[in-house]
Image (tube, rainbow over all chains, first blue to last red):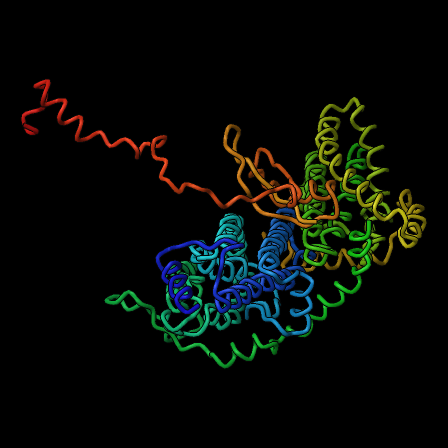
Length: 298
Length: 189
Length: 95
């Protein structure tokens, strides 16, 4: 068995692709399924912060764009839960575990969205952080997941533009509108810096070792900073971290070390909006249980 | 206000408010595949409203957004059917079925109108609504045996043609819809 | 029921497997496939197929190396070289 596992490890590390019916080490299958399940949960929970603003979108264009964005996220959840199901865990069981708090979802979806400024900042920067991870997942060793990432990345491309458009419009508006953006950025910067996870070295990260992730956490964070801090600064916005600067010699960004305890606290179900949002999911699910049984009946 | 503008606003208001209500299901529909599908229906409805407002806006020398958002709740001409908040799936589908039926009849009349522009837009809208009708029928067939669905149809049918009432639901919805816009009047969003 | 969806991006191209959806029957499956794989106009056409209608085949037998019907069964370099030399048509750098 150990030899077969070694061969499998060599296979994925040299770019080999794994399909649903291929043999996989138990550890690979378990970690893979948990990782993908967390992604599906995150897409599903990611809907909720933005839903409130679908109702409050201030123009017809924004209304349509925001509804389409949230629709995409529901669609992504559908795609990803299907992959998890084909790996052996039915969707209903995933939803049970999500609602009971047994399984996790990404930190950013545990926080409140307080203003229209949040809508812009989330669509621009949270989606940007997510797309960096998602692009790295295009090379995932598990092929069914890598394949759906293509569709997900393609759909996400308009999300960032929509976010940027909302932000730019606010920055070109009144002082009150500009303040909405800065205030939202001040609140979201901490969670954004935590988004890609703690600074574990890739070689020590089983997800990277099995080539489920093809990028280390720190590398993803550096990519995010490199791509988006200039975009933030060029609008005259300030990032609420006095340590943030790029070392021109090494090309690496320096920043105040994120609060890893906060991250752990939040993703284990103690975020400001965790309980409310899981309640919403639980209630929605209970209220529509009869629909699912009617459809399965005939 | 011209008769044409009044007619356009009545239809646009129906589509806007119904689309707004239908969009409330995005993310929490009974299951994910239906979530995606129903959200497209909501977006189509808002899209139809937008196109109709744009026609009316030219006649009234304003913009579609101003017509959609900047009137008072009492100025909307939508039917009471679309104003209600219906967080139960059977009532939402019942409304969907009833609305599509009534709207099909209305669109047939418009497509036969002498007003070429309006007839053309009605034809475009009708081509999209054909899919909505298919969707409504699909669900109606599935829920046919469900007593709560029949009860919902009975409850909602009388509301189709009621356009004089200003329900508290509409006022509440209007307040949510216009919250951001009213926070900085006249601003661009 | 699980349905597999195949999509054709542009006319003339091959249909490719795009993913799967869960639906109670064909009518719903068509609606859901159209939305999930076509709402952005990203496909010209879709095929929606119940999963059990798809039969996977992953075992292929070639124990005795049947390269007679493949390009790699025809290494002609040496023979060509000899034939050109015999005909005196080999290029100067090959002589």
